[in-house]
Length: 184
Image (cartoon, rainbow, N blue to C red):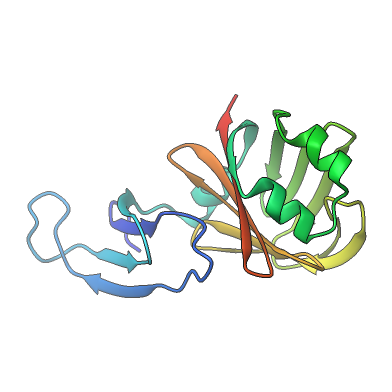
């Protein structure tokens, strides 16, 4: 997309995030034909956002975040086999996520009541990862359209920045937990 162009992006965490894409030629200053505009139409809320280079999108993740809200917490964690006592301890805990990025290399740490979980990965390369339950596995993390995606053994996890907040969605068996964290 050309510098100064705009893109529509969806509201996050739709269980099937398929998009219809249309491109239009417009001039950024006058609305006349000449520039470019890409429209992504998703299942729910759509908003206009200046297009960024892939480096800007990746760099947007850098920072420290504290959980602000979460949806379907209990149902999702039970679905993936987390014990009830751990679910109870974590329910009101303000999870802190720290993302350190160097090019395509990420260190993604989350502080939970019982432990800190850190995953290091390189976009589009197989990396050793750890689940919320402590199980180690290998996966390839991808970055497309500003969204990081990784398939864990029993759930899929996505993360993206929306409105300056980190929005993470984990889905297993039709249950999606959505966490929104503010930058601190």
